[in-house]
Amino acid sequence: MGTAASAAHEVVRETAGIDEFFRAVERVQDSVLELFKCRIL
Image 1 (cartoon, helix red, strand yellow):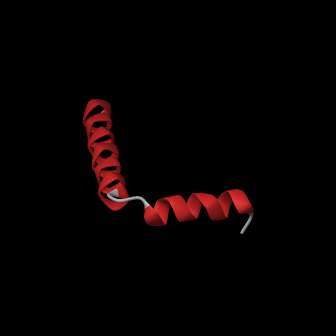
Image 2 (cartoon, rainbow, N blue to C red; image 1 turned 45 degrees about the vertical axis):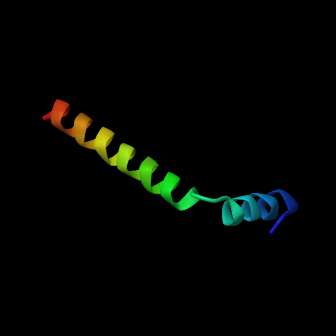
C-alpha cells in the first residue's frame, strides 16, 4: 500500500462511528435507487 492509501486506511480504522456512517450512506443510496426505479417504471 502507498503512504496515502495507508494513511486513509488508518483514518477509517480509527475514526469512531465510521461503520455507522457508511451504513447510513448505503441506506440513502438504496433509497435513491428505489426512488429512481419507481420513477422509471
